Length: 108
Image (tube, rainbow, N blue to C red):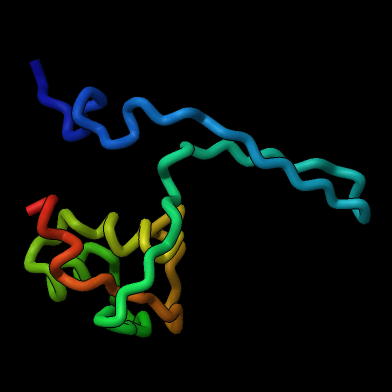
């Protein structure tokens, strides 16, 4: 049997509720519904020792995680902290706040 990379039983979102946000646009008379997991975007903490990084050509979140944390698998910490829902849409010039290394200690 093949092993999946994603194991739902170990997911940090396993018991999260699915919430719905809706936004009405009067100009088009359409309502947009966005479903998201309750714990997906935690309240953003401010760290005085965060690093500011401006995305350049070829930058990707996993490469940044490897550079700053030594593990590419911790890319989601940068994504969560910067409220990024799709890491493939982060474009050149985007300013990111990289949480300090101590924040990743529980995931090492």
